[in-house]
Length: 499
Image 1: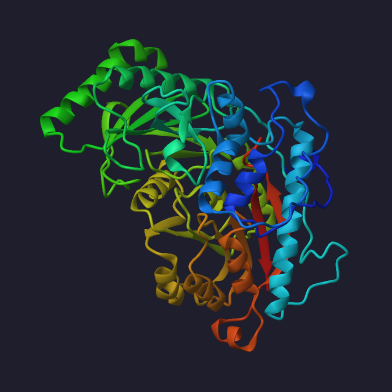
Image 2 (image 1 turned 90 degrees about the vertical axis):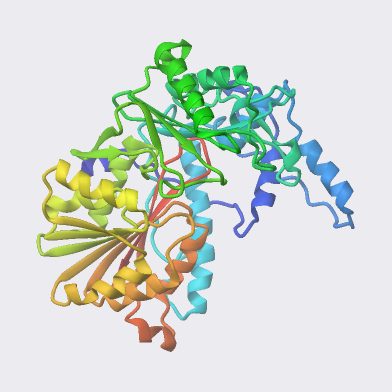
């Protein structure tokens, strides 16, 4: 595997993108790029579109600003697929090698900003001509760059020409939600054809239904979302999410029966669903505890294999959307941690146990924790499924569990993996990790390096006197970018900390 990784990595150079931009600014910059016909790669430029020249600042009233945004984000029947492609897959025009170069540039710029923050908390690092606080590996590429997503969440909303109950992805101005429209995913190259087929079939079903769609701007309708999951074997799970409004149990039952009739015995049977779930959700999103997922047809779970370990996938299980590159990423985590048979791994924000279970055979034991009860249930099931007896998982918040269980590991050698969501790790959890003095190597997996992960890195490395009260600081030794999301600007980033 080490040889394979060495062959796959691609060397690139430092970038020029600025950091600290707001989401709106990024959206405007993307929308301003020159539009070319979808999939016409002969027209793809060699470099990113040049930035628009800066205009002198002038006062602009709210109405004028809103009108300007409407023009930039206007979506109609002619430009809808281009607009969606630039929104969902902004790098689709560029050869994959250039995509990796752009991402490496982004990562370097983010690390330059991180270096400035580290200096403010008295963290010293070797002088670097690029101003980087640590070495950066080349981006670990994905073996698959099209049709790689194993999970897609489709919205229900009117289309660009007013078509009711279109199923797809939302496009439009973030400043004018009433003009946001839904565009079919049929030309989105990162979605599997099987997922698109399920979305199209669901759209045909709800367009025959007298019940209107439920838009998050008013929550007055019924049909909300469709989630489609799949595994490498091609099995499909569809999850229909509906706002029940004032429907009686009998009326809800008829809607469920209608879905089964459509997907099992009707036109939707061509989708060959392995699982069909239903959730009656009254909020923007609902967990299984808030609104249970009800199995209407088929098997309750999908199964996927990563690194020789089998994993169960439930409706709300977190699972990396790009399974092939996830295998490489977990092997990169192994290389960074250098686990030994004497080590115990603290798997913080463990999800369904994917990282810990793929490393368990090289460790003394694994202790994982996650706030999701469903994820922990899956993690413990996955351990049993694979006959792994040295891994245990517990439900709870990291900032609560880490101090509580510290006495269990006083005499043990520890390493740690932290894999939080976009919101990062709670500050109290970071402090608790620093108090584990036995942890000599820690890998932080960030799905949004420019977000809360930056604060966590600073907290782990903070060398100011008051920070020493919560344990000795870590030292940032290496950054390893992983292209989990080809065709987009997003990049997973592994940080290695030592002490």
